[in-house]
Length: 324
Image (cartoon, rainbow, N blue to C red; front, top):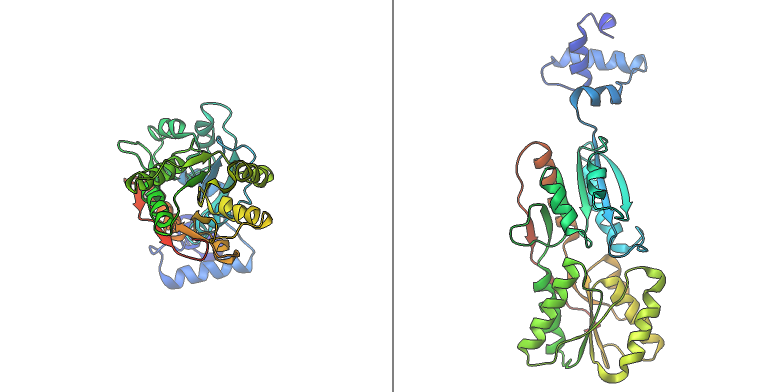
């Protein structure tokens, strides 16, 4: 290419990289010659030279729920926004669904040599593993809760505040005996449960009944049905740990002929797009997934560039619809 263009190889390299160091007319001539001769730069060679792979790992750790699928609506909504932000900035994505079966599973991901950085969709029950990796690997950002003094950069909502909002809404609507549907082994869901407990305590009401519900779709409906059959008419309010659990609960209640919100009020968490399509439409606590994904990518790019980036904790918003 340099011989054809009558320039040196460095000029060709810069021109094909659209460098401002090359004159506009020279750059246009070289790029036209490259197109004419079907020349494409070798991306692997470029990555070896720059020590950059141009790939970001998007990892979904499932230590708490090994059967949960990537097709979960929350994962898909988050992944869509992350993919938009990354590809628009010239990065490719390597998507991994990881079942953490060894303590160093995250070190294996970041030590593969294939990635410029890692985005985690959720902390799962792997907080300690994430902290350990973040102590020596900077381009790592997780979606999830933020705790004082944590080492890793996280982006998420104030889950305690969100849980309290849900509790306050149930109480204001007349609920006096509330159930929480969801496991409390992960930081995010644990904080949502704690916020609900605080709201009920402030209202002088009993602590919520807490029922484990797996996030795996193949068992969720059966578990919810069994819990509701067990408590019968003893509850008049439900706060679900996620919109998917809440939507499944609406279906279970409809099958049992229980009126929502007449007999039981139901609130979810996330405000995924499907939440507005249920019957009745789902009251929920919104996490701004689009803004959160953008913040994750911006923090990651800063860290790839050697800068620091602080954790971001967004304020949740209660979205009032028909179910509560």
